[in-house]
Image (tube, rainbow over all chains, first blue to last red; front, side, top):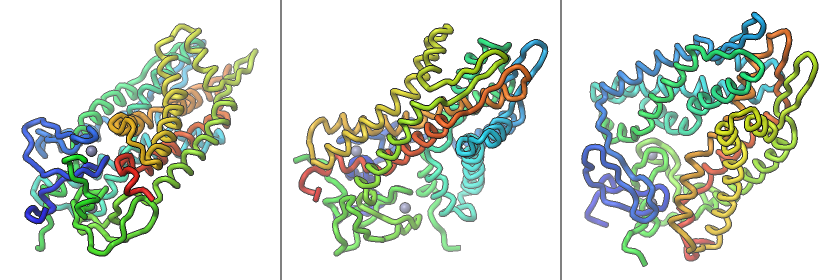
Length: 205
Length: 217
Ligand SMILES: [Zn+2]
Ligand SMILES: [Zn+2]
């Protein structure tokens, strides 16, 4: 392989097969011929579109955390909770491990992900590497599977059905905001952020 | 035997963090997940470059066994107490599924059963199988095993479902006068099971599936 530079190569992370990089067509996904894993995908979304999407996600995220998720009613009494209500309740009920898990996977990690993306793309829009680009890109990679908003939406649905046998249950704006957030996250999940490494080469300036 | 070249044979290493393809520093020892550290840093992101994830077999086994040990109390112990004026009811994962089924939501019962029982069991069996077959350098069902690993990675975190359900119900019902929902230790063990199985599948290196007998020790 003496002729090609390493940048022109692509290695499948799932089986170690080496490929020569080729330009992808719009929306095309390159898969590994040996193991079938995804190698690289072309994303048509512009940086501006992604920034707009992140801003939307942040607004929705604030809504999702501000508004109650579900309200219970029983003989005239009402009780509702927000995400932080859940986190605090678990902490006080001697389930601190669960409280930390919920806070991390539903609040801190998603928040960090959005802030990191926003920061990196804001500078990326101008073709520049954001301050702290390298450690922040590594942090973004490490956050990987630890955001679980979509699981929470399903969990809220199950909780509503369970509580429904004893109470009047109303779904509140918070859960709709969460559902919207899940949709936005799904769009993001299709974007390969590693491309930023190639799109924004290091500059000595 | 295949026309597809592998990085390990060409002296190349891909950075697992940023994807940069690096030429191996000559004279470095071959690494096959046996923990010999070659401590070369990726020139682009600074992460340590390794041919295979370090101690993949030992770490994955340890995490998987730990997860399984947590999974037993997670199923045996109740995860949630519901109390009203005239009765106290301790729910386990299975009794929660049965209750959903009986009370007329079989579809949700199936979803919870899948997330809480099927997915963790699949992870134990799948990762166990992958560890054993990769260690033996088996060439059995390579593509299917690779696909199985990707499935485990993709669906793993959905097991957190029941943990979120208990947390939400607790927060909702705790202030009402007539009834009470409390988390019980089972839910903590279950949360730990999910985290440990996720860590286990992350520490398994799928490239070991393809390494075969010759590169294994
Ligand atoms: Zn592959
Ligand atoms: Zn790197």
